[in-house]
Length: 168
Image (cartoon, rainbow, N blue to C red; front, side, top):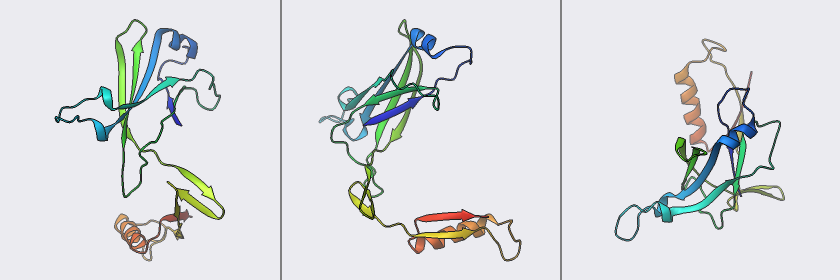
């Protein structure tokens, strides 16, 4: 399931309904791995894997924008080892047809679930190795130096630490 939250920056006097009366929000998800066809030419239309539609029933007090939803069958899952990315394109069109704004970004899709006493990402168990870190320097106290913070982070990565709780 794909959910895209879109917020349109406009004056507070304009209601959500009047925006939808004057504008159309469209979104599409494109597979960047299949942009090129067999002869090496770019073929964007055939690389579209999901057409994301506006869901009018998702009115929320917490999020003042618009929710677009779609379903993607058999997505290529993102992981650090295989960073499969899709391109998300959101288009704001005037009701008469011309494009007002167009934004795009790369997105990765992963499946996070839980099993008894395990956290699974894309079906593989993840081991969380965490530390409790106190921001403190032996010479300058609580005012830490950036080079020392970077040195600490490199040391943590060398020791396979993948979660940090900062305190104080």
